[in-house]
Image: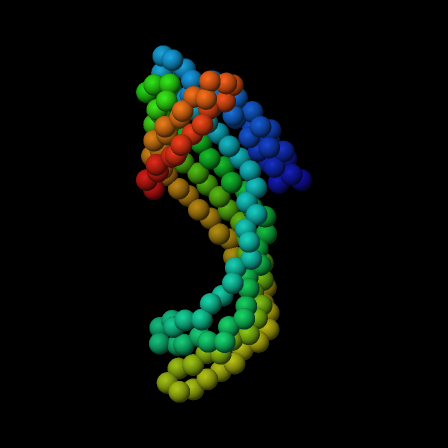
Length: 155
């Protein structure tokens, strides 16, 4: 229930954000702005590849790791230097869970091989915390919206 409320809040905030951002980005006198967003992360299943780890060769792998829907939050404080250019400091947090790994593969070390097959439940939490410095250049299109050409971020 808590997650559903977060998704609804995220959708509502995301729907309102373009109007707020547009108003701030076209402010002729510059000024500070803030942004907040929340939403759902829908990670794709992850494929496991062949390779070598600490002298053990993994080959013939056919496996995937399934995951659950997670959540994401981000906020930014910045300053509009002009109608077209702004800078900001942004922070974000995201998290999701890994559920299960399944598949087959062969492990080889010093000429000895072991073939594994099956599935196992996972209880892994994946979290990401990111800080970025953003520079945004926006071209007004003459209407109620604008075109953002790009965003340069350093994390």
